[in-house]
Image (tube, rainbow, N blue to C red):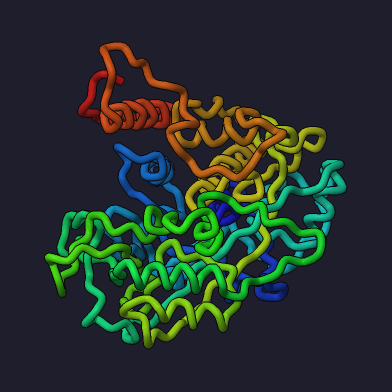
Length: 445
């Protein structure tokens, strides 16, 4: 995501780019193709609400900056209530085709095993969470410290035709969405209390993937395996991805489910659905057994089972300057998930900034500092000094990273407060891009 976006931003400024991609020659546990920007976990870019959600605001900022990732996501979007979900195959294929077709982009399929020297010119390292072993070792050797790591899990994907629709029903939570298609974007599988308790028991008892010697399970809290959540308390899942609120069973409207498993469409044809929030490290045999306990999925066929992989990231607050350059080797920039941001959108956003910064350097231009009140600026500030280095962990964009809003005038409701954040950010982002400020409903910004 980050490398693709960085390349796109640079060539839009007229700077030629050589894009190195080790796949398909060198594969990873999670990737299945040689396409750029392949989505290996969820197919969702999360909330698209740019007025009340920090992720949606980041979407807006990237669109306003002519971001390749968001433009392509919009072109291949799927109904997902208030979220932005995409057909993952069409999305990555389109990103790949756009970059390969651009006259200023050269795609080289090879593995970079060492850090390029200053003679290579400005370099952006956007190797994502699955940096190859050789390059990870080179980075660790250069920085004088071990690369940090956490474990990330991917959710299984089910063939839609194998779901029992006499049990499951279609509905977005709280009927969210502007169209009927959006309001019925999710498959819902209900559980009563006995079914839920039996599911939790099976989940806790299932065989799990074992870690290699010396590895530790430092999970990112925003993408926990379901069995890890279950270990934190039997009700954790029922108040997390299996919460039953905002849903009415169309087969039995008067009976409230004790828990609900949601599945989100994963391709444009509607033939594949991923189980929302069901990242897992269970072994394959255990997965099919446990997941077929879910009402409506008794005969489910899986296009992909879940898995677990090791993500690598650097301690950016100690290693990177405010231009995302490696201190001591300023020709090297880092971008994306390797910098300690978490999520497709956040990774692409850091690629967008790195691409513009590197291109400006080549052109002899000086970019003004990224405004701290924007979603981009909040993330950049976090990874380049705002976070505590000793406890640095991957972070999604959220309003907690933003400079607090002026609270004068009494206590504000959350939505009003969020609208102030987003109005302020939009005005600052447009100013940074040299664009007219957008119209805003709330004048108190």
